Amino acid sequence: MNPFFGKLLADAARRRLKSKHATAPYTEKQITPIIKNIQVEWTHAIKEYIFIIIGVFSAGFGLKGFLLPNQFIDGGATGISLLLQNITPINLGILLLLVNTPFLLLAIRTIGAKFAIRSVVAIAFLAIVVHYLDYPTITEDKLLISIFGGFFLGLGIGMAMRGGSVIDGTEVLAIFLSRKLSITVGDVLLLINIVIFSFGAYVLSVETALYAILTYLSAAKTVDFVVDGVEEYVGITIISEKHDAMRIMVTEKLQRACTIYAGKGGYGKNGKSYDKDIIYTVMTRLELAKLYTEIDKIDKNAFVVIGIVKDLKGGMIKKKPLK
Image 1 (cartoon, helix red, strand yellow):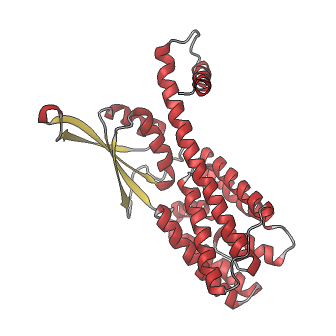
Image 2 (cartoon, rainbow, N blue to C red):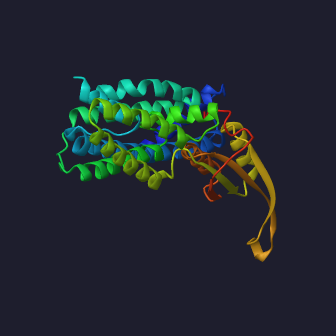
Image 3 (cartoon, rainbow, N blue to C red):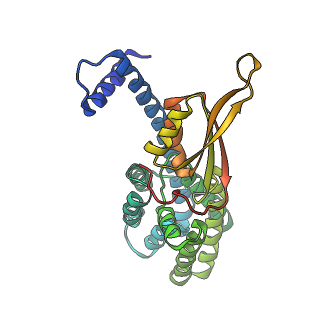
């Protein structure tokens, strides 16, 4: 490891120990596992912010290269911002910040403060990109604008979600309402966008609203391709020799319920099977980035199986925000 980064990690580990009221001097046995955890956190954070940066530039390209020069709109908070930009003199970058602010405040309660902070950074960065960066206008063909504008916008939204944030706040509102009204996130988003497209048809034209629906469908399918949808829950099976530490991490750090299966390893030393606990839990895709980070802190060789969960009933899954 580079000596400079090694010193940074060691200093961060000492500060973390000090915050826990540990007395100095600190032993190597105390510092080493904390350095390892910080290294994993930084590695994952860098990767997630790279996803967010790619997402912001892609969304900016979709907005300024296709939709904005041709007075097109989309669904969600971005669609509301585009609609307002067409009927007011306010810059789109400012509108993106203003429209998304209530949704980000709701995100603190619904998902967690860390997620909300990342989303604030992502949306502010998108506003800066849209305001200052000049993208070329790619085409004036309305069909190409609706399809490819939606594609690049959806790619941006999906990549931002892969980084543990959103650049369109209506997903947060949809998650919140789905928990209160017992309907799916997809249904809530559909209702929100029907309202937006109806206003678009009234304020602009029916033709523009119809093309906006194509843009929305293109963006939605692209998001599905990138992250399989914000509304989906996933079932996670974790198999690790450090199964007890994994159980404590899931229940205490992530505050998620889990089920323990008694299992046997089929490929043990000398070909003999051995007993081990298998952990199963359910969470949303927005929480996977945090889960991967915590798993790598404990056991980088853990075997993790993830499957899409189509429906849920009961349990603790919707009751506690991600910390």
